[in-house]
Length: 291
Image (cartoon, rainbow, N blue to C red):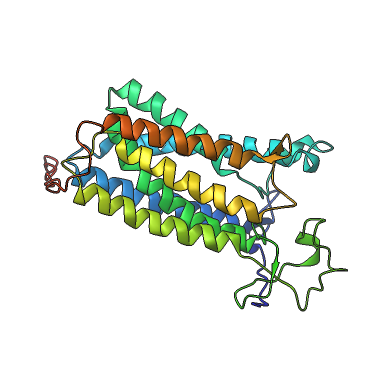
């Protein structure tokens, strides 16, 4: 077991006049790093494809803001018992919960609205964003570790992590599972590692089969990859997952998502299956700004 339990607060900004002190959580810092990394990768992929990267700066704000709203809304619905007696906790810091599928829905809505307004090809830009979104998840999940959340059942495996008593769900109380000797499956790490592998896989596909893939294909593969990721890991989340008729909502969403994405992908390529390697996209140098 790994006995380390992190402090969720990175540092505290001292009081300045009537403002403060303000605690700065690691969760927020991790989210910011994830957003910057995703923006960096999306910019590189857009440039590699010969796309104008100028809209990314504004578009990423729209996508992340709506994604953040969606992720927060899903979390609040999921954990309504934490907020029903104090509704201000929904909008006031510190924020301690974001849910991916809410963020995905909000982010996709932001992308649709922005690309339509700017007359940009939606599916081409969705393919640019797909590996970047997975990279954001891979990094952002470490914020869950720093908050001591997103863990699975007790385990004797050497990489099991300690969870403080007040951070546990009722299923695994310290009375029955002593803090000193009980480790838990690090679901955050499993998802982070799975997502990092997914980033590498999507980037490899985008280069290896550049001539065969159609706009939107990489997005469909991303939906299948992450859907499988969440569907499998949800089996480890007994005790604190959002359910619908006793079924985890994540699996209710992920299962059909995988099937539909796979069916669409096969339908698009029924005439040119199996996949055929093609030349990589030749980068187009962006013109330098006039001085």
